[in-house]
Image (tube, rainbow, N blue to C red; front, side, top):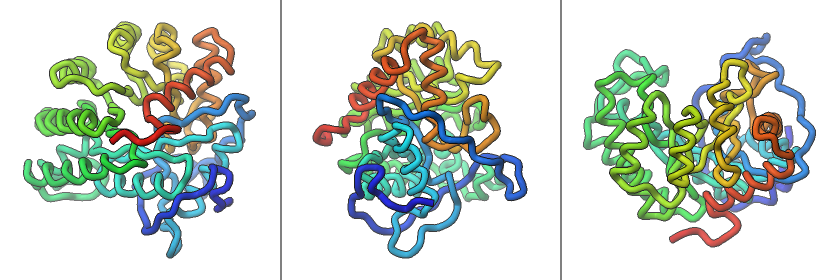
Length: 334
């Protein structure tokens, strides 16, 4: 596996180590199916607007390395097919620190930092039975949530951090007892994003109405991204009216995802992004195999077909939208 930073535009200085958790449950003798082949490179370079490099491999970097060879290889493979910018997304305090360090170390990797919507209830209520599959945890109450949010706030001030997320609401995995903690955390993330002038990256699962309501009540930041857009066409029209960006992932290619394609069809080009959410949501025809940023071209080409536009035109639009939303290629907001 390649370990050079040169293919992603050089490296920034950085030290320490980070760790991720979780990866797709794919088949194969080693527990993983074979990685999909490299797609044909894009003619117009784009960004993977939402990825989890820390979850691609559980092996620890060697001493003195910020990232291990799997992450370096993922960055190089993405660049080789025209995915030249990666937005590395934090989901908890440790992952957000990792994202910030990795964005400091790699020239074309930028970070977002946050507590995932399901992380807030774990902090407040604990996880004594391990329902989250991330280990048991004792309840810390609102005081521990405040401490975690203060760390996210501090990280959001860093110049290589260009977004606050993924935050939002997820009513699928967290029961009703966790809703208050999720909403409290979401409101605080909105405030952090506005104060630091960073994009707000939203995870919205089975909570559309509450997400839109809270954005209205708190006042949305200048840049709002609905990561892995999950609404229907009517919600896409609402997002467009508010200027919210909609980022589509590999699940838009799934056979049973016609509502997502209907939403994509009505979403304006100037509000579209493309993402992998790697290592999750591998696009068809590779569903069930490992996902990584180099597969963005597969999803983008499927999106272009739905939109009825030329691949290069869509790539040009999503590249400009990502640069505008996350503010790279210009001085960091202060």
